[in-house]
Length: 106
Image (tube, rainbow, N blue to C red; front, side, top):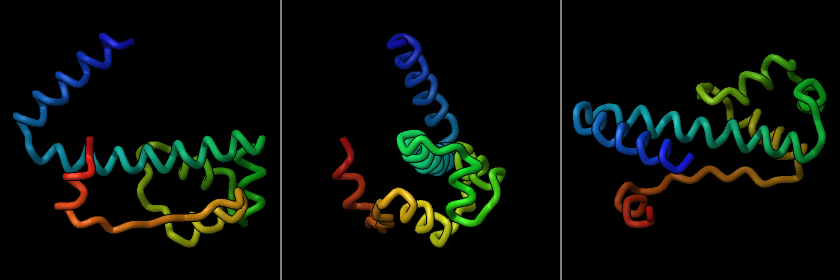
């Protein structure tokens, strides 16, 4: 698996050199994946199905499936707050100035 990751990282690095605008799109996808996986992990740890979570927040199972999709980016703060409330979690949205963001990355 490590070899695959190393090869993939090299591929991405080359692609970014060829097409710098790709960086912004990859960052957007990365954030969407992060949110999707957080919702999935919280739901699974709670032992809930998508349908059960949907009922708890007043939406449909298909909407939960969409939220858990790695390419979905149209969630609302209101929906994320409802999900956080179900899991007794805190929703945190931050705006980080680019200078601070770059210096805090590994």
